[in-house]
Image (cartoon, rainbow, N blue to C red; front, side, top):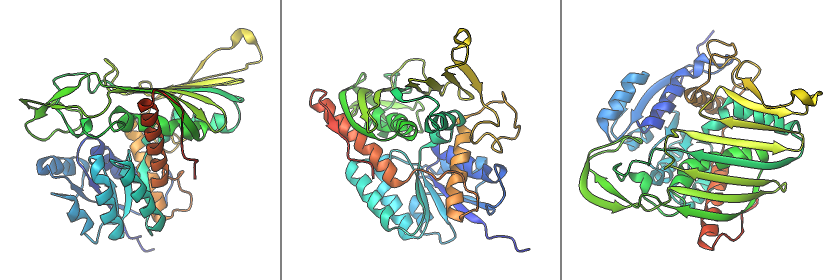
Length: 397
């Protein structure tokens, strides 16, 4: 029997999300069924060479490279994750696709709607797999709630209420990193709002319009950093300050194509909330809720035969949920689930597509899907600029 040719992977970006992609690639052959070729951990590229070298050592990659161009020029690399500042996504993706490499790009798709549209057009003509990292689609609880909705177990839906509340920008002494640059919509909306918008459409279908949008910035100036800023970490800063160019907080309502009503709020200045993606889905026959702060469970309620015992039930993650069976070493309820597991499932799904395995995981979101999210974000911005008026979202393709 001949050994299949390994799939060679690389990660561009060695920050916290880049390391999550690296860990995912390292683990892909430990989960689910056989059929995926061996994975060669080829390189991690970052302009911060020391950071790249540390990530390569930690996650077993062969080498660290000083720039993304070196990845594009390496003919031995098959698939690449792009995990850098949003404004760099388009030029890197274009170079990688031109070099014949499969691309998994972090969200949001690009730094501007113009760049996102160009990337979606690139995808239509590409002969490689192009995908976007909406990692929460892989959370077992979220995938299970989607299945409840698709099977009609909540009845006709009446409300989707979603939020993503974080605290990474509450410190006024935090440095003015790239996350605080860019126009309206590129702050909390683009960074974390893109996740809850995608989760909403993944569960409840396309959004048709948005209204009542309000964007605000709580900390309007931040100190300029003296060096590189990694992730949300603190860093040495100067005595000079620069303007924060995008929003800390946003809220809006939405109308789905089905007629469903949605309410959304996002913030990066929510004290004490490290990673608070959460939502409730209400229907006339049931309801479900998920909170990322308790990722190994979700709540479910439906019309039990006896009204005396009705109420929300805590569903503990176990082999009965999507991804859990075959996706964790100890396949037993109550052993937990984590965000890092979701990155492993996402990496496996991406490489399943690349390798064309016989029984792949559900496919990753596409550039076109991520463009749609950015179109919704732009509609939210337009609503906020016009006093909260209703703004239509382009129909789903």
